Image (cartoon, rainbow, N blue to C red; front, side, top):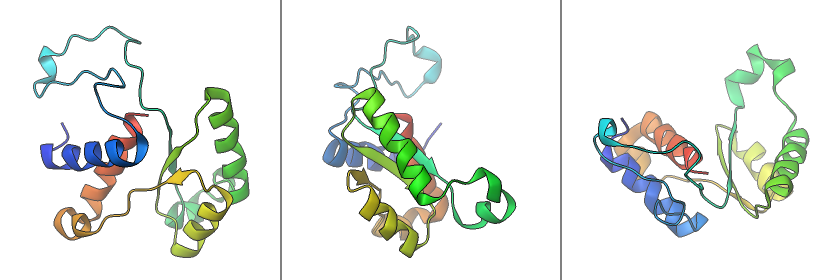
Length: 137
């Protein structure tokens, strides 16, 4: 289970930047997951595409599996069009220059950029926030 403070940061980000709340997206949640009774397929999800775009050290070991930024943008745009979405949330470990290029190629992109959260929760906590936001798309 994701810690409540990390979920709260992710939920606030979703609401502020992605027009997404559990109520609007029909995503039921209870602290005790054993009490959740959800019918498969009943959640709508947020009005955005969630993408985990791996870069950095992953490229070295999996060069053939990692698309170029242009290739990734082409696939993302195709998925956005298929699902009728106008925004995409990107969780990535791209270096600054790659991130800036990605933002130039995909201006609809939204990314969680931690301020005090990085100091408070470290890289692992920020990764969990990214996962939480992606999982609600």
